[in-house]
Length: 451
Image (cartoon, rainbow, N blue to C red; front, side, top):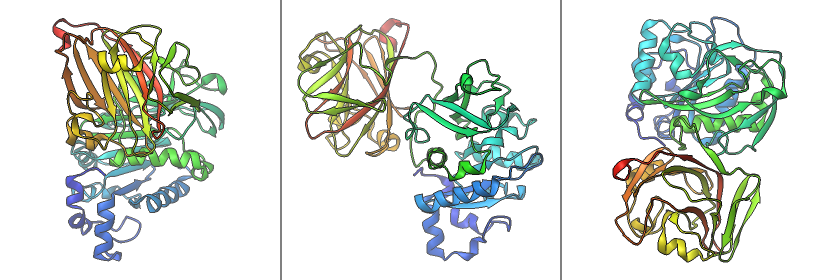
């Protein structure tokens, strides 16, 4: 859970709660209020000044159910008077649930801007994009404004990021029925797209084949998650959509981490369907199911043999089942011996329980990650994480869920990061680590090793 000044002031701020929220703050015992503050607190805001969705009560009920099941408290309001600095301070996120039109005055807008800039979070659902067209800050926060929609119909949702908690439970394609918005602009240049619509799978899409429908971003000090789903009442009874919404809320409040930086220009090395171009070195193997490679046996390594890489950003989604061991290797020559990568390249470790220079985020045996930053960015076993390994010259930078946790420069003349292969390790029979969505972007080599 994200440490926050807002949580520290939650008990005091509770006294300032206005009567618009569902259930007075004073109805809880002091110890219950403190427990709720410690677990996180969300405000659902559903005021409408235009079209009103009849699914709003279902959405509020769903968020409350998710909060009960997952340890965060939920208040709900349609009173814009809740948007004061003191009242917002107690919330880890504000869910804008199918709001429409101009719902806040200038003072309330200023309070919400301050809340976001102070580390607050926004979760926009469906018609949240049909809201506050004349407020530029809100438009950037939401990511895009509504333009139009065709009739409610079935469509294929292409899941672009299966590492984020809002989409990690989904397959590569998600078939569902909803009211599919077209947007006035494409958010891909400013936000990290999690899922998009296959416009050939339904009628009425007008975004020229690139149609984001869910995205996230860090925005002016805060976090923003938006999903275009949620028009229908049935959405909030659908387990997959509820998990999607829950994952967005968990990321927004800091209960789960993910890389929400803009991602463009990457091409797959492993696309989830085939290991063509890869070779297994040493014992053990990887199983392939649901677009995921999972270790079995070892100690071996699956390495990308099709070409060597030089000056690149490699992104890999990975997940441990428990206390497991694995790693990602970079900068090694071609070989059918997995020890060649150990002796001639560098391993970026996946094992959160070893000594600092041999634990998750370390350059194994050479340099520890920043442990405090690593711990804050790391999702626990059973949840997905994303590495970015950025190699320029002899410099290797390691990002975990978008946070830089290590910066290493090779000075060993017997090794070089300037060119080499990449691979994923299957460490041993008792280790279970999964990998997804291995992709790379070529970078232009910079003088001086990329500093």
